[in-house]
Image (cartoon, rainbow, N blue to C red; front, side, top):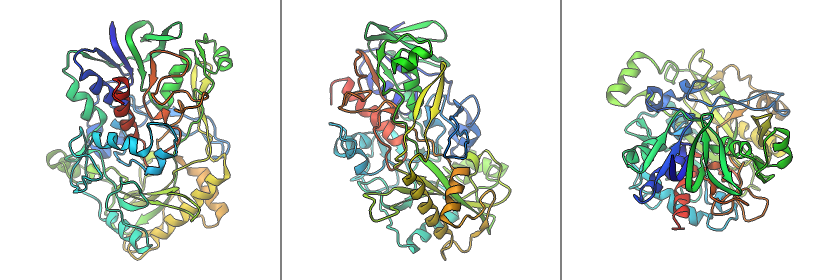
Length: 514
């Protein structure tokens, strides 16, 4: 099998590449995905994503023990299915703010450069702000069809506390509060596969190979010439191999292919193709803690999966099962010294504990507190030939300080008059810590990932970066990385939107249009 382009990973960026590159009938494209088809009801139904965790649709990663997180190993779900993590995320379309991209200081990737690619992707429904959003792209972005009554109370609480109401969340500044725009089409999840891959699926020059785990990239000298998967099958690439396997999969695959820190590769018994020490370094993730309270009224998402709600969803595409769980957000600065928001509050009209894997004992409410710009850095490496994920959470004390300040603000939200009809006493496992020391202990004992790893194939102009501004792997030919792993720093938002943007911009770079 031989194609012009071979793409590894049918996730947020990989589906974009498959569509845009195969739009040229003169080239042939292969897309290889480790997982299977995305036809499960829990993928289509927005509230069903937690049912996909720790199943065959999930890579089901576990981090190394985190010394600053009470020695815990943390669960990291990542999508192993057509659509990748866009088929099992919370559908929040949150670009971040303009400063996020300007601070990368990479030519061609400033906010003004990337904004047209966000807009190219978007088909914004239910908004008159076409000065902010694209309106004819393939990716539906809409309002929630059936937001919970407590979500309106959260938004009123933000107003009561003096926060800024955002007319649209995805403008140049996102400081303030807003309902969450979601990647849904008439109450149904709209993944990258829905937006990009399915419309291209019948093209004769696009081949999609599923249930195929890639073992390594194949090289002829310093040039990538194809990939090997399934224990020996070979797919050749006449022009380029494009890694879109995500912030864990892309660096891990580079290392398994002999590209990385030479000493680490040799220790793992992997022949060195190219010594590139930065591969796997610079790992960043959004760490989230939260405040949980009982709800005085039985109006939350607890028992949302009743037969009545399921029928309402299946027949009308409305009701509680259209929720994305994180129904509203607020982006805040914890001090006047912060140049932009450093904390995000995510409101969930239910007790979202342990990734939703722990069944709720009653009706409750959650305000999650997300550290947007962590100073701590981790890595993806090798443990023998297995992957090692060490996010290095809370290695920098400033990260603890910001999360503690955010938790104090979350507690203020529940103390407002707007929340008084709903917010009750603390709900287990939350034990109502008060002092800074107790709040820091709560973060260390119960903090979790918000599912946004980036940075492990960092883009830059310096020789220590993994990829250059055109996403070409330094020192090699015919090989690029196109996913969130190339982001030098995290955005003050969520990572599905920039991953799609990266796919859109990369397609133009590959075709010579940018």
